[in-house]
Image 1: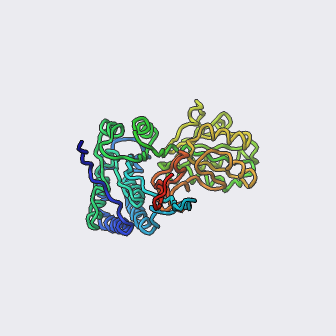
Image 2 (image 1 turned 90 degrees about the vertical axis):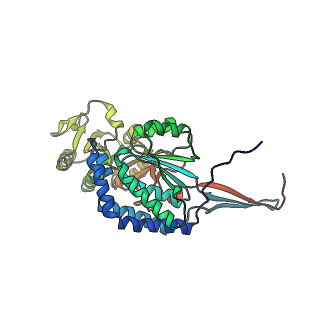
Image 3 (image 1 turned 135 degrees about the vertical axis):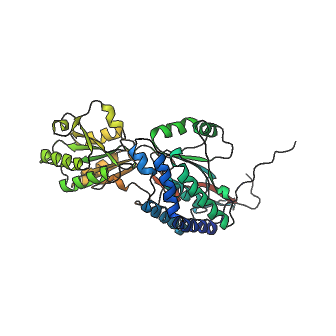
Length: 406
């Protein structure tokens, strides 16, 4: 019997080469800045949807290019996440046993709209020693292909194969077929997008999937809240970037909050300055400028828009139960001067990130000290919350012996 020839695999690039490629990528992003922005303008002009969050994620301007450059440079400065010893053990029979971090192999990133993912997420996966397959949305095709062209240039200039970063120009049917029966080795899939994309990937994938789930984030204004702080946090979390998964969707206000009516009126006024549509329960909808909530289904929804839902609530315990029922498992915040109440809230709310007196907008790899993120996972395995460089690895056992048998 003759064995079939297997496709030649990519040998792990040493960390010096990976870092050199990332630094060269940063240089190319700077030198091609104008070309990238011009090509992205063509994608923006061709976008005919009315989803303002999608448009916001699609847009590449100088600040977005700056972020891409910063991400690539920072990744190059970080320690190699591959081959880090996690555990060692000397067996009674003399064998030396080690457990070390290892790359996954091939990571497929499926994403909508965001050309910066083509740098940041791909860069994290690349620095972690993985081959990258990118499947972006049709709305950002020109921008993505330009950035992948830069990846290939950086790789070739440092003697590495361009197939370390590969772009898949598949339609939906081709993508489904690839997920179900990959035509090359596939070890991990990371979908970056809305609930429909995530559901599609989960349904058809034949390998592990890290779920970067919906936001639907809550802020609870406890009866012992600092009112000015509460206003500042809510306005920031709702309006700073409505397209972000860490943006605020729901506000729960303690029914025993002192000067509650004044607080609610002030909050409504400030939200209206940003043209936010406000939906309210029976108590909140009595205020001018608030539309009544017609169905409890609204509490499950992630808005990604200038839209917010508000309600009064009776206690910390009721708030915890409501968040755990309706939220996407992403982020939640309590505004209170009572540390014990905050401690109970943070221990019992079942979200990847919990905050005390701070905006949910900090659920982000760079803000959490990771330097960037592949995704923000709402799964509890294999990593929860922002997935940084040190998390995009699996592990491997190394056993050294001299003839031991069992």
